[in-house]
Amino acid sequence: MPDRTTLVTALHGAGWHPAAWRVAGPTATRLSSLRHWRDLVVEQDRAGTDAVTIEDSFTAGPADATGDLDTSTVVGHLDALLVASAVAPATRAVGLVPTVSVTHTEPFHVATGLQTLDHVSLGRAGWRLQVSPSTREAALFGRRPGGETTEHLFAEAREVAEVVGRLWDSWDDDAIIRDVTTGRFIDRDRIHGAAFIGEHVSVHGASIVPRSPQGRPPVFALAHRADAAAFAVDAADVVLVTPRLDTDARSGLTGRPGLEARPALEARPALALVRDAEKAAGSDRERPVLADVAVLLGSSAAEAADDLAALDAAAGASYTAISDATVLATTVPALVEHIAELRALGYAGVRLRPLRIPEDSTAIARRLVPALVTAGLRADVASRPTADLRTRLGLAPAVSRHATEGVPA
Image (spheres, helix red, strand yellow):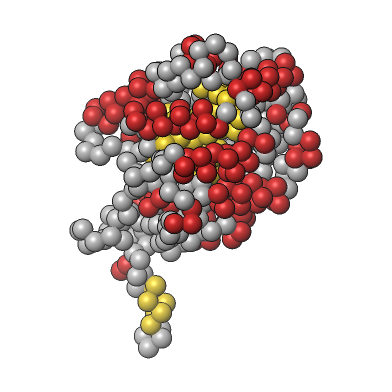
C-alpha cells in the first residue's frame, strides 16, 4: 500500500449526476472542446492529484426506459484515450487513465494506444479496463449479437489483458541499438512475439511501439461483486470498489441528523471482497484498493444537501438510489474525515466522482487536496519529485517476462 493516501479524480461529462449539465452553464457547451479537458486535467495536475480517470463507452449516452438515448442527460463524448494523449503535453505529474473497453476492441489497438500515451506522457499512462455487455454497443460493430454472459465477457477480457501485457513486453528496453557500423536500427533478438492462442483471442507478432517508460502502464478495474473481484485480481494492478454506507452514515454526511456518524461502517465488506479473491487466486500480494465515492462539496452540509436535492429534482430521481457508489453531499472537512477512516480500514485511497464539473472537481483540487495535506494524509505537492504513475501508486517497477530474472525491464 502506498505510504500516503492515493487520490484519483474521475472525470465524466459535466459531472456524474445526470442533471449536472443543467447547472453547468457554459461548461455544458464545451464538453467536446480540447481546451475544456485540458483545463480540467491541468487543474488536477497542479493540485497534486495522483491521477485522473476519463470515462468512455461505445454508446453516446445512457438509454431511457424505451431503450432509446436518454436525452435528459449529456449525449455524446470524446474518445477517452485520444483525450488523454492530447492533454498529456500540457501536464507534468498527474497520471492519465482513460477507460478502454476490451469487448469489441482488438488487443493490438489497446496495447499500442496505451503505449503511445505512456510515451507522450513520459510514463504517466494507466488503463481503466472495461467490458461492454450491451446489445446497443455490439450493434455498432456488427460482429456479435451482444448481451453475452458476464462469465463470457470476463473470460474474454482476461485473455485480452494477457495479450496486451505480452505486447507491452514484446520490445526489450534496449531493442533499439542504432548501430551505424552494421546498419542495424534494432536488434531483432530483442523483439519478441506475443505468441498467444486462446479461446477468444489469438495474437502473433510484436507491438509496433517500442517499450514505453513504465513498461506496463498500471491497469485499473472496478470490482463491485465477487466475479468482478476475481477478474480484477487476475487482470489489474489497482482495484476500484464501491463501498456503501449505512443509512445513518449517509444521512450524517448530507446535513441531516446523525452528522459524521460511522461513515466507513459498510466499507469493510467491499475491501474484504478483494482480499478474499486474492486468497482464492493464491496471490502473494495485496493490490491497492481505492474506494469509489461520488461527491458534491458545499460550504456547509446543509448547502450540499440542498444542491443535491435540486439536482435530483431536475433529474426526476434520486441519484443516491441509482448510483453504484456511495453519494456524499458534504463539506471538505467531513470528506477528509471519511477518507481518513477508509485509510485506517486498509484502503490505499479514493477515486472521487465529482457530481458537478467544474464545481466539485475544482473543490477537490483547490480545497480537498490542501485539507488532506494539513491532515497528514498526503505530502505537499511541492515536496514530491515527479514520478511515473506506477511509483505514485506504490507499485513495483514492471519487469518484462523476457528480461533477465530479477532485473527490472
